[in-house]
Length: 112
Image 1 (spheres, rainbow, N blue to C red):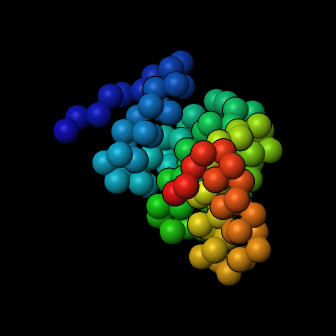
Image 2 (image 1 turned 30 degrees about the horizontal axis):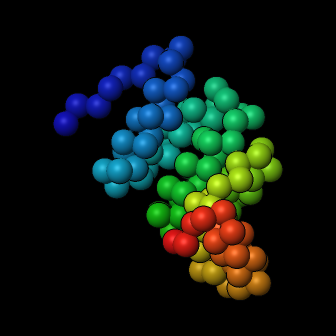
């Protein structure tokens, strides 16, 4: 399957293609595209959120926590972000933080 080429001026294409790669479970490629999107938009929460979720799928929990923290700091207040950060905390042995995030996720309508 041939993926779309992303022009330097079309940074949104990196975000969209990252999602496609994530759906195909090609996580390394998804992370690379989300990273390019973030390079163009370092103050936009969605890139960090999506890269953090992808890193969670890759079981790269410490990097995922860093990205998910950044996405929340930038204002992304979605249940999926808190749920995935909770998963990372749980897998890393931070049960109290995990429980807080799972409660926040549930409050935001995400039950995992």
